[in-house]
Length: 388
Image 1 (tube, rainbow, N blue to C red):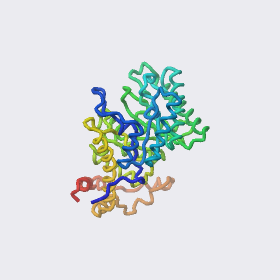
Image 2: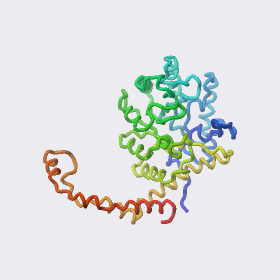
Image 3: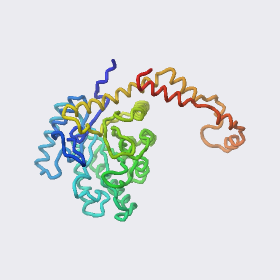
Image 4: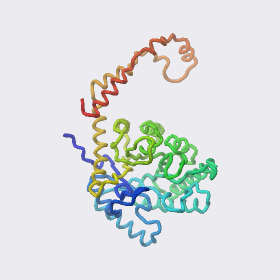
């Protein structure tokens, strides 16, 4: 029997808002008691997590006095010290309070935009105080319901100015922080700016300090748009911008379900884990999800344990895939190279282009070749379901 016990080197993390979710939704009230941040830290320590992440107001209420803030933070630090949990990532809640109903950094009201910057700077200070090295930006209200309300170019300009300002603030404070942008196509706004990881990657290139800004892709958010999440993660990795990742599960093209990782789309989850492990991703594996509304406090622990166990099972399956003689022989056959095209590979030259144009390709033979992907996919299915 394999050991699927989470260990610190796995860097499994949860947010205060995940295991602390009381099960409320737009159609029903809470079904579980709310846990304090200190209680959540101890729950996560009990289930074997490595770290805990937070929005500023997950820990400190938005209307807390300075004295209340200091007391709450001191209690939280004590819980971290007692349990050994760390805070790898922090973020700002710029979506819950009514002041952000038309956005934060992109709001049409300059006072709201200024308040959002002020709130974020104070939240960055808090994150750094707790040890965070990654700061995530999710613009849940940065969008519109009607395009009559705002020119999207103005929205992008305001977002760019805010991130440039905050990069400068972080550097001026001497913080060792990287920023990670999180995309989502819709919900709670009808349309959210920069809706996919690809949009975010293009936007980052327009910033004043692109070297300190990357992405935090979330599985559920890309599946909401009907996209292949692993492909977006691969593009982020290729660009050197995979600073953090949110793991959960989601039926395609639904509302934001935030199911337990591995609970629905097993094959997609498998190839994601295989990719992360194959390339050597060393960052936190953060579970941005929550237990079913049917669960009590023990069910929440089952959810957290299951998230980590699912990842470790799929990690083991990825190692088996890489070591399976039949699968690897088939992959070698599919990718066989007889060396005849070596002269055409690599950088351009005039001579190479001329020779390539003159080469007598056997187009019918190339088109007639079977690629054996059906067999490869069935072998993958057999491996995942335990039939090999």
